[in-house]
Length: 155
Image (cartoon, rainbow, N blue to C red):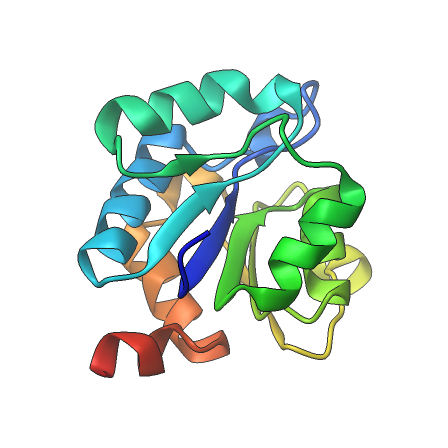
């Protein structure tokens, strides 16, 4: 991936749709990220192919790595990422453990005090009663507050 880049992790348990921020919001976020000169890459399990396709329909400049990475590759990508943003899901724990600055999106269906990833790069939990009510602006601002994204776009 071309540096600088950020990871977008839109997955969550298939049986827990309330833990998924809408794909169209990830697409809008990806557009904002790319327009600021940062490569956006989607990662996830093959179950996230539909979310990735929905994002790519809106923002075709996104790099689609869904079902093309194993856990070790996710960690290696996260270690070098300017940031990672995603739902309350396992790969976000890997990204945080690898040192990526992380923004994790939580609805009222999860308690970030109990399940939020931990990592040396910094982790910010963004919460809302429903992920449907969480805005792209909130998430983008959180990325700027947790990682190297703010410095990248000022350069």
